[in-house]
Structure formats: structure tokens, C-alpha cells
View 1 (cartoon, rainbow, N blue to C red):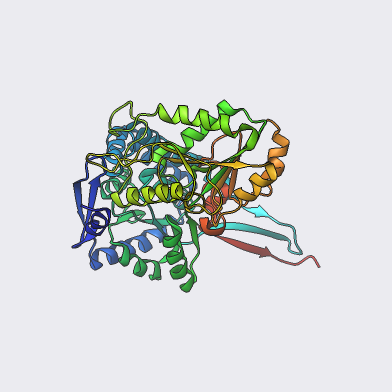
View 2: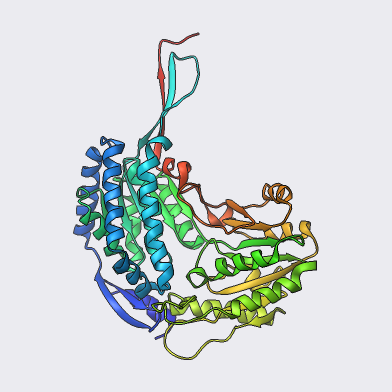
Length: 471
């Protein structure tokens, strides 16, 4: 079965099909929701929202902590489902469930302070801003971090007093069902959090439904543009976290061993299928060759194989079409003059595996420089100096994350001000953290998730003016 056939087969005949990417075999089928089922869930979300918005933060926190408890108790099952449906290595899947638990507990503890009333002096006796829930929020989610991205959207939205509808990716129906199960086992009231099992074309009608007040979308720039158009036409707020071609600048005074360790980790997490992974490694000329040697050594040592095996570091790509596109990018970049220092050949056998690959001598205009590479492919670019590195870092339509490695932290902080990205890590890895806002600019999206900014994204910042005026 080709990648396109597999993709088409996943969303036909009213059934969502999960394909184990390690074997290429269909492992699960889920019937899509009928129109009547969608209507029932929309009505339930709106009905439940009228009471949920009036509950205290303490009540919401108790329920969200109960969901976290259920996830903790069922962590092995939930992690195994991710490994089966999208190929996440077992140790990473375990960590993703843990991070989802952390997100739930973080918002249970901090939502009230994040949404505290802000008094602002004016001509009123008292004037302030209070953050009120919007209503029902629709989360449209991708396959690459099934649990984490669900809770990144849902935990703050729920703690703010909204209800949630989760439309998960068609390739991970089992993960979607287990996320819904966690809420059911925690005795969260009906209608507060519900899954929608839909084919992609059916999502537009849900976005347009008047009972849906806002949309959270994580996925490709192409998909985000479509969601943005629909939401904007209905005058509904949306938060979009889209693709990225994140630069990692390594200056000549950097700790190269530490930088190489983090670059390798960032590049191969989830088999390289991460929007915020370091994708374009831009090294100053004096350290380029040494960094290339370090990356090759460390990448060569990684085991690619069965994602269920404890010692596997890199599993398969999630779909055959994704692997086909990645291989196209690698071969095209080599044809354009890049050097393949490691990997680059399609393996034989079942599953959608791709070798860990390192491309050197990549230049602006080459395929792997201009396109987002979604897989275990590291791209190494030589910069004349730090100004040249900065220019190439910003030479991209994306603006999600970026990193800088330098012994001169003050200089790196000054450089960060000129990087066109939503978040910058200095001498560390770009990551998402419930305590800190995350998001992008340019074609990487808009709006912020996580931290105090994320929970406020799906609230009405209501101004209240209390008289009499003071003149």
C-alpha cells in the first residue's frame, strides 16, 4: 500500500483506521460520528457550559486532578496506544503521559492566579479586567503528540470555565478514545469534555456552528490557513500552532559537546516529527567541521527500530506518505549540492522507518533549507559569522522556535531580540512547558498556548467600570 493509498484509506467509508507504522498493518477502526451524534455533543457542550462556567476554581481543579490520577493509574496502557498508533518509542510515550499529567495539575493549581482580576486605575471609583469563559472551544489536533497536545489545549480551556470538544487526528482514534476515557473515569460531568470522531471535511461545519465559540488548531501551515479562514469568516478567535523550520545557531565560542548532545536529542525526539525540533543547524565556520564530526558520531550511535523495545531511540515515521516526502527532500537537497554525511537511503522491510540522516554543506535555497523536514534528518549550514548566521536563521517563512549556543549569554540574549520566532532557547533545548507561553509567528501561526498567556487565549477580557466617576 502506498502512502497516498494509506492516507486515503484512513478517511473513507465512514471509518477511521489506525495503521501501526512499525508494520504497516491496520490495528484499529473507529466509525465516524453521524450528524445526529455531532449535534448531540454540541448540544451537550452548550448545556453543560451554562453550569460549568459558574463552578469555582476549586471544583474545576478537583476534577482535573482526578483526570490526572486516572492517567497516572493507566499510564502503561495510554503510552502503549501511542506507540502502536503513531510509532512513538516507549520511553517517549511514557514521558508524554507524564507531561500531560503535569499540565493538568499545573493548571489545576495555578489557573485562579493566572485569571485573577486586574485592577487598572482610571476615572472610575473602581475599574478592572476580569477573565470570563467564552463557551465551547473546539480543539483540532494532530497525531504526533496525541496526549500532550490534547491536554495542552484542554487543561487551560477547562480551568477557565469553557467546555471542550476534541477532534483528534484520524490516524490516532485509539488515543482519542483513551483521552476521553480518562475524563469519564474521573467522573467529569457529561458534556464538559467530549471527543468527535470525524473525517477532515466534516470539521468545517463544527467550526461554523454557533455553539462553538473558539478554535485551537495544531498542525500544518496549510491546515492552519484553512481553519483560520473558516474561523475568521465566522468572527471566532483561533489559536494556531503550525509548522516550523527552527534554526539552531552555534557560535564559535559555544560548548560544542553540550550543543551537540542537545541538537541530537531535539532532532530525533519522536523520530524528528516535532514542530519545535532544531531543524537547521547553523554553525560559525571556525567550529563547523568539529560540530559536524560530533553530530555524526552521536547520531550514528542511535538505534532505529521497534518503538516498543526499551532500547529503541528512533521509531518509524507515522505514515508512508510522510516518509516518501522526507526522502524526496533528502534526495533533492543532495542533488542541489549538499553532502550526505550519514543515512539518506530508504531501508527494506515492513514499516515506515527512515534512517537517521545528516546533511552537510546545506545552503539557502536548497530544499532542506526552505522546507520543513519532519523526520530524523539534521541539516548543517556553514555561517561566515554571527551576522550571517542571524540572516540565515530568519530566512524562512516559519517562526516557531529557535536556539542559540554561545558562552556569551548577554550577546545571545541580544541576538534573541532579532530572531523572528515565538520562543528562543539559549544554551538549551526548545520545548513546551506548562509554565511558559508557546507559539509562533509568520507561517508558524498566532496566539499563545500554555502559561498565563495560554489560559487567557480562550477568555473574554472583560473591562468593568464602577462609578461614580472621579472627574
